[in-house]
Amino acid sequence: MTMILPRRAATTLGALAIAVATATLGACSGAGGLGNVLGSVLGGGQSNQVAGAVLGVDTQAQQIGLQTSDGQQVALAFDNQTKVVYQGQLYAVTNLERGDQVVARIQQTQNGGYYTDSVEVTKSVQGGGGTSAGGGASGSVQSFQGTVRQIDRSNGLFELQGSNGATVVVSLPYNVGRNDQTRFQNLRTGETVRLYGVLLNNSRVELRQFY
Image (cartoon, rainbow, N blue to C red; front, side, top):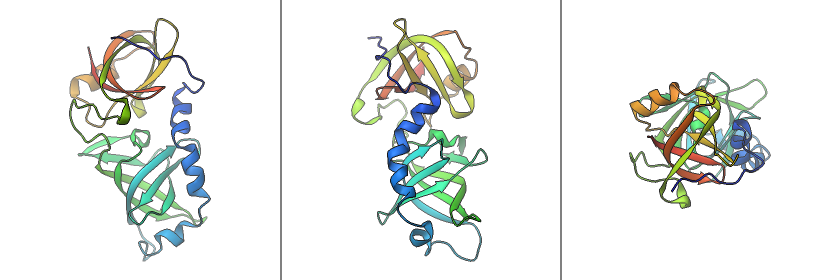
């Protein structure tokens, strides 16, 4: 069954990522200095690593929220040079999902915070399970059809508008197939597309396959 959910206030590409993470990262950034949490990890004034689960990505503040194995919550700064690696492939920071297990390479900044230039995903919350429907409580794969309105190629996102005017943001998964990757790279604004995807929340769909 083809479906497009009703329009919500936060439907732009930037607003979506911010909405997912702002509340959590606000708590992270106010939870004390990172040195208290990572002091035992850092040393020698050089790059070190910290492991944890992703809490969210705040694109406005340019921070990645992590929860370490001992339960501490921290925020790591990132920029457009920060790379995400999963199974040998490069992704944008915005491809990180809440619950992903990662190891981040960190450096201390002049203002006493910490910056990461490289994040390796050791276990995807989606499970890397091919065509299996991860995506949490949303459940099964569904069919979507609409017109492409915005394309963010660097972050693997595009906005899809249905015939009733409602929109969703479609994201590429870590394990996207080569044919779907090529199809995404060739998308044009105004083009009508059909796809199978998993509903992650009321405004975001993760692509399973174009058809």
